[in-house]
Image 1 (cartoon, helix red, strand yellow):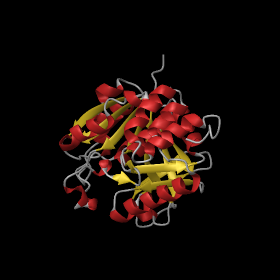
Image 2: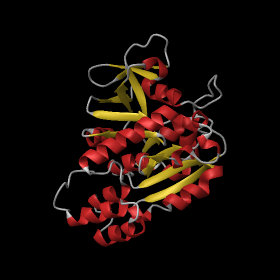
Image 3: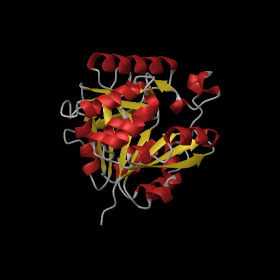
Length: 300
C-alpha cells in the first residue's frame, strides 16, 4: 500500500539577511502581518492534505517552536521536530528527516516561503498526484539571475536548471516548494557537497532531471509567491497579507480554519481554539466561521 505523502519544513538557518532582527529569534517565528511566518508553509502543506509534518529547526530555537505549535493535534495534524546544528544546505533537511519519512513520498517547503492564489489547490493536487519522480514549482520573475532558473517544454518536462545564471534561458524561477517520490532520501544521500560547502537542492533536482523524472508546475499570473528573507520582502509580505485580509474579511493561511474546513477538527474544538485569541480579534474571526459556515465554504 502506498504511504501518504509527508511534509518537511526547513526552518533552520541563521537568518543573517534579517539581522539584527534575527539576533535573538528564529526568522520563521517572526510575524507576517497577523500570524507567525511558520504558519504559512504549514498551511500550504495542510492545503495539500498533508497531516504529518517534520520541522527541521535550529537547535537554539526548538523550544520556541514547540511552545508555539505543540504536536499539531490542536489542528488535527501531527508535527514532529528535528534539530539542525548548522545550515548545511536544503538537501540535508531531507537526510535528517529519513526516520520521519520512513520511505514515504515527501513535500519539502522552505519556512520563509509564502504561496497564495486561487489556483494554489490545483497546483498542490497536481504535484501530490504524481507517484514517481519529482515536481518543482516555477514562477515568473523579472530578475531570474537571482534564482534557480528553469527551462521546460510545453508538456511540463524540465530541460535544464541553472543556479543564478548570468544569462538566464527563461524568466521562470524555482520556488521553495518541492514534491518528491519515496526514493528521495536515497538520492539525497548521493548528493555531493558543492563549492559553497552545502548539500544543495539544485543538485538533488539535477539527479531527477538526469533520470527524466523531473516535472514542473507553472504558477501563473493569479498566484503570489513571496520569499520573506530580507527586510524589504518581509515588509512587502506583511502588506500583501494585510491588504487581502482587510479587503475580503478572510484570513490567509489560517491553520485553524483550514483544519476546520477539512473536518480535521469540529465546531467545539474550533471554539476552544478561539477562546485565548479573543483580545486580538483572531478569536472572533474563528467564531464567525461557525456562525457563517454555510457561506464562503470554499474560501481557505
